[in-house]
Picture 1 (cartoon, one colour):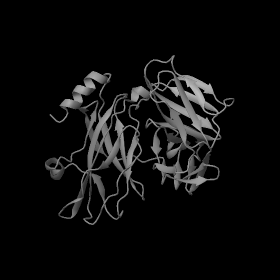
Picture 2 (picture 1 turned 90 degrees about the vertical axis):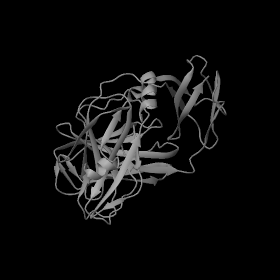
Picture 3 (picture 1 turned 45 degrees about the vertical axis):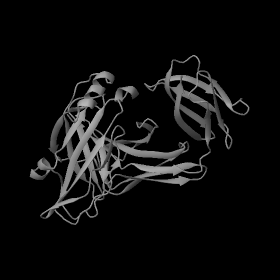
Picture 4 (picture 1 turned 180 degrees about the vertical axis):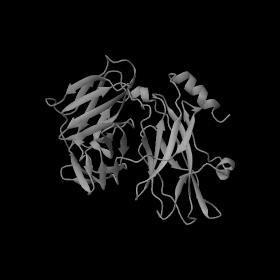
Length: 338
C-alpha cells in the first residue's frame, strides 16, 4: 500500500522504461564516506526512492547530514542513531520526482554514481551498508524504487578507484566570480576531469574539462575560475574519468551570493509580453528552454533601453526555464506561458 498512490501517479504521468537493478557500496575516502550506486542497465525515468542504513562498530559514532551529489534525488537522515550492543546504526532515505528523460539525461548501465557523501564524527571505525536482523526489523534494509517500483540490487564492496582523496573547494573571488580548486592525493591511470555545475532543474552540466596527470603518487591541485556564477546558490562537483571510462565524483560544494543583483521578471505567468530588468547591471542575452531542455527562444538585449521586453505569444502554453546573461553574471528561473 505504501506505493499505491505513487504508482498510480507514475503510471499516468511517467513514460515506461526498463527497470534495472541498482547495486550500492560504501567507499571510505579517508575524510568522508561516499555512497556509490550503480545500475545494471541504462535508465531515464524517475529515481523515486532510495533507503539504506550505515552501521559502524564504534557506538560513539554520529553521522552528519548527507551532502547530495546525484542531482535527481535528495538524501536525508531518517531519524537518530540507534545503538545495539557495540554497533551504531543510522538510516538514510531520499525521494526523487525528476524524470531524467525530461532533461535528455541517461543514467548509463554499469556507471557508478556518488549518491551522496556522509561525514562521520570519527573515522576510527569500520563502516558498512547494513543488511542484518536490525535492518529487517526496523525497515532499514537497502532498497531502491525506480518509477515507484522496488528494484533492489546487491550491497557490495567498492572497486579500487582511479584517484585517492579527490576533494573540491570553492571560494568567492573578485567581481562576483567563484574560484574552484580540486586536489588528488594520488592518481592511477586517470584521463581527465569534468567540472560540473548544477542548474536550476537539479541536473549537473559540464562547464570545464581538464586533463589529469595519468599517474602520480604526490598530491596535485587543479583550479578553474567560474566567471559566470548564478544568482543565489551555486553547486559544483568534479567527475574524474580514468582511461578505461570508469569515473569518480568529488564532494559537492556550494557558494551563495547574497548581494547578487536582483532580476525582476513580470508579469509571470504571461500570455504575451514579459519584462526582464536588472537595475544594478546590464542584460545582454535572454534564452528560454522548454521542459526537454531545448532552446526555444533567444533575444539579444544589448540595445534595449530600460527593461527588456520579450514576446512569448508564439510559444505553446507551459513552463519554461530562462537564463539571463549580463556582465559575466547568469540569472535562472521559471516562466509560465498561460
